[in-house]
Length: 236
Image (cartoon, rainbow, N blue to C red; front, side, top):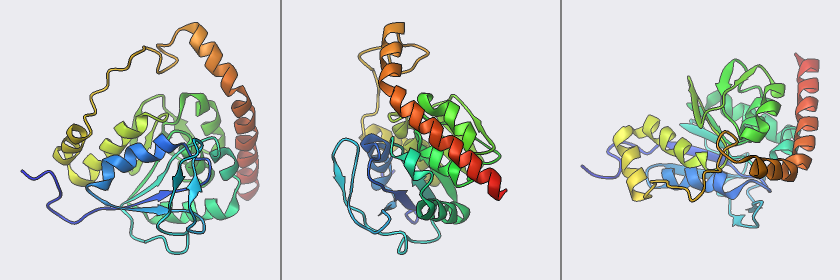
């Protein structure tokens, strides 16, 4: 059996914006790139800079983003908090979400989907540190799972969950065998050096230090999420 596709290649668009978390983007992209046509879409088609100073070149702008997408995907990053109140971006996300076969996110990219009203009435995952914020963006049931599938909404938890998410999406698009092939090609067989990857397993000192590090993000994110809630209530 061939590793590649036997049928047509799915069409996937990824939203790019300054400040996105590189691994949120690159892990799913790596899972998909061998088996799908992936379009990298920034507002004006210009390169963007991730939160780790990696520059990613877009292939399309909002106006030239292909239609009839199989997947529309929003990666996360702290910049999502301001993106939630960016009218042009939210309108673009809403329009793409209304026509894509699957509407998806990783980490707090779910906040952008929520601000666009695309998670109303759905279950969704996000980073553990932003679960209390996601529910403010709309009528979304926040689920503490690594990958959540609710009809055509597929959402991943924080950062490294992007690879689990990417393989799950690939299985939906091309079948389990293609996704298993991709997993083996990527040698995705995790054995983390520390048992500290989630608050449910990390020690108290680690949790306290990380929460202190994220406290400024938490204040800003909550303020932005509450503003989204206020604006959505005014237009309801």
